[in-house]
Length: 316
Length: 269
Image (cartoon, rainbow over all chains, first blue to last red; front, side, top):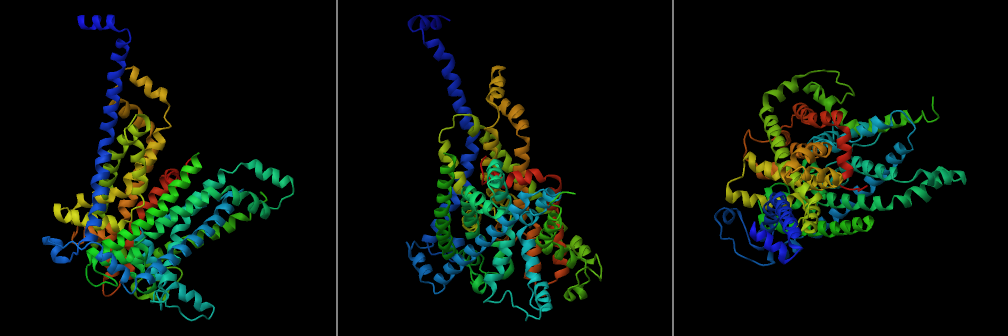
């Protein structure tokens, strides 16, 4: 009591501070308490595995040293091995083709369907748009096995269909065709994502623009090129960049269909194959897998940072 | 009849084409083994035998997947919800760095994560265990959930939170009795995606739980069929159908939450 009154007498501002400041400090600590599990989680389950991955790419691990320890530090030697691998540039090229082809078709098909549904005016628009999401929600192993069966060379549906037109059966998942085949399945997988995002982008374009344009006599085709596409540019950029990061790192759809054999080997399936000792690499190669993984990570982050910059720009 | 009625058949045809692979999966799953290669458009030689095989062989895997999915949802929300509340409405030191880390985290390839986790799990003995797989699967969902929930909770009117504080509610109480109930929709969306991703996971299951025996998820049950010498397409497709049920159910009962989740990550209103 006495201390309190003397303080009040000494400085009139202190009581106010005395009540507000502890509360703020309490809030500060409360905020930390609420966030600390997340921070610890990010350190333990993101930062630590990443560091571990990097460490493995700098030491020469094999099965024995992996279990018993004692893998020698070799600096960047493993990265050099990876770059010197006779298949390295082929795989980089295949990754590029797989990504570019997937993105282009996912976007074009997604946009076409989005515009079609957005112009709307028909009863089934909403329920059917929902149905389009299904492929995106299913486990990839489900879609992968189904596509694999449809692409079966002698009993698959695709070849029966081509046979109707007298075409020869295609060996979809043979070494030469595998890239095209896994890209087809991956395009199918990516359409729902593109559709939903582009559709919500279309909804953000003010209706008045179209009304004004049609009063000026613009055809729907002109409206698409002069209004829809330019207004959709920011959403397009985001969709493509997100799709790019996602496609670069995708493993399951390719692995399930072809185990990354032949032309369908990408950086991601290469790393995965070496980490489990299957596919093109018959033995487990932790260090090489980690090195390829790190290269992949750097590529994904580079495009990821562009994405972040693009989104920041949009917000301002 | 409106002028655009003709769009209905076109939209139907597009949807049918898009969903055709799934119809084909159903078709094969109901066709007798000897007729599968015939490729009839409808299961002429109808059978449910493949499903009998699924329930005989795959039931433990389905149970494991259910456990892993549920565990991932609980863990994800337990970490994401409180943190999101703080990030949305309190002065958190290092907020920008946390936000940046969360976006970057979503870009890390699963292969890199599985390699790093494999070596850690190998040391601490989490390989081939359910908690190990739940922890790994949660890494797919936590960053997404935090970003989604933070965006949602930032929209809760300040007055609502201040009113609670004036009434003497602690931060924890405000969080529990106001923020959580108000954020119901965003929580459902995060939970739904956490479940679906855990249920669908293949990479973590195939690397961190290789020797898990019956404690392996359903995705590995299907993968076993692929690896088999003699590929049994009937049971494989029947398992695939069963593994698709959660997604189908969620899409029917919770379509608006699904659509909200897809756009949340990419487009900010």
